Image 1 (cartoon, rainbow, N blue to C red):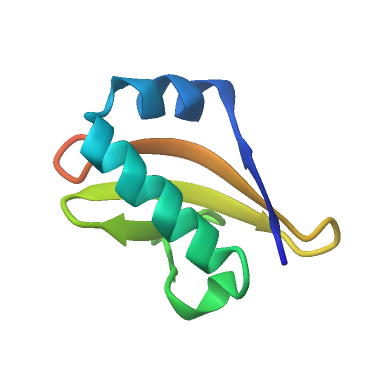
Image 2: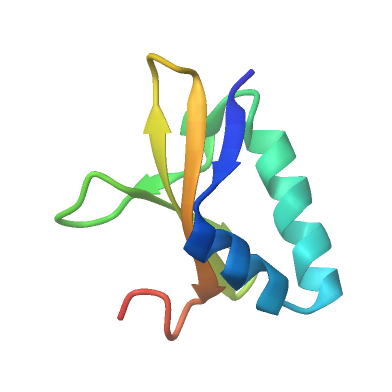
Length: 82
């Protein structure tokens, strides 16, 4: 099982979301902590990954040595990649 760590900006992004979206994000992160490589995709031209949660995206990095998922950003799909 992978440990989930939020960056400061991801934590701020998370608290700006509506409560129902927060619940969905937490649920998805708990599910992927078992095997994250099944549901994520690598961002083009980057070492980071993205995870789809409805119309929102979670940008993350995976540290295999530490068995850790570093959540970098969370936001709406229209604005997260800018």
